[in-house]
Image 1: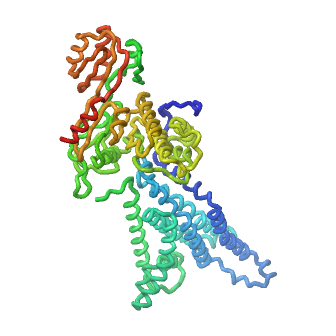
Image 2 (image 1 turned 90 degrees about the horizontal axis):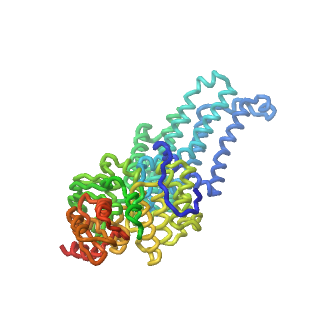
Image 3 (image 1 turned 180 degrees about the vertical axis):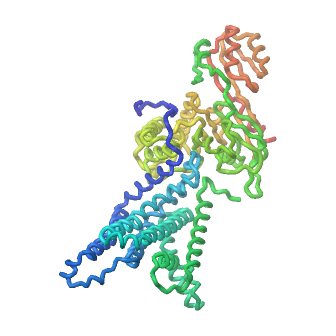
Length: 285
Length: 316
């Protein structure tokens, strides 16, 4: 039917599967995000370090070239520390991407009262949160565990099956540490976005949680002469957990189990905030 | 099947377009109560609404929007039950939402999106495939009169245009029930007229049943054939369907037959006003007219006395 005909006809065609509808949000949100040239540029910059790592892996397996350069072969070691450093750098980029992309996910819907339009359809709050979270999850996966695993596979291919078999746990470490960081960042960004309803303020809050949190932790440690301040430093907690996952020897002021518990606690708070705020209408009792 | 009634149409032609069966109940409430903390907003509402176009009428704070939000599953009932199209609000809310189109009272849009993308996305969320949702988004925006502005960002729309965009997203997926919460809120007179005309068109199209929530008597008068008046969360009045017939050849026998159906009836010259009794449909009136060779030249769902009824309900 021509669209200019002003009459209404009911829809009698096929419907999509209910489980697939949260990807509708993913498609629209992602399209909106990548209209920003800054985000696109930042996303490209996120691949510089993995590319540098790729060169290092190649160099590590080019003994003749290293000899020409006069670099001893033992200087470049592709091991758990190498991948831990990759994860640390990419983790910072993941945070920057989240700070830019995360706050705009939910706050515009809340600010413009769009939530009733989502939830008056056969579409639940959980599906809404999953749809929005998938934007960040896939975006951050593309710069963390995906390049990490590609580098691991390349290294395994160059070093041989013996190295791959004995270092297989590193692949698991890459995956687990990335997923923890992605889940935490996604929940934090969405919770702040839902809480303040204003994209810029939510972005500032996200930066504040990371940087002021670290400063606050240092101040508490210094004033109270304790190490408990680290519980306010999310970055420190995450690095503590990553060190354990990558089996990197490092001194920590708080036990790994407590760092895990603290991160889970923060995730629970974020989930609680989200479930409280992501409603069609807020009930004022 | 459409039940459009047009002036001057002969009985035989009209009779062919009469629905074969009475309309099923749209909304059934059984002792429905809604409580926010200590405040009880809706108090034991019990009724069954089955009109083509139903109005929830009442002053601000009467509980109209709360009732709609409860029917959509946004609020939980504290007691009693509610059904929409026979589906229970408590346990079958997804089925209800699949057949409902909802136009909320307040601003509801995504500012950085064009109208066509916005309506398409809402269609996809209702389960339409992407290409079909795009096609229907264009159609819906043409239908509501936003064709020229459909590529503009919603944030740049005037209030009237935003209302129309909300209507477009409510009908894009072809719902069976259209719930309109204060659709003429904040509109200037000409925009209001357009909105009312649109609602009447949808009602007369017969494809959707309408639940209109308003505190404006004129809006209800112009668009609805059944009214539930709420006051402080209670049913103040349930107004059955009023019918006005312009007939040719009506006699005392016809009037008597209508009254035997249980309808209250008043005759002036060739006009008849009646209140349809429970279970009586327009097809019954047509049948009686056909049996007695009475020609029905015009049929209107009139509510001349609505203002009186409303004021009386508010005083009670």
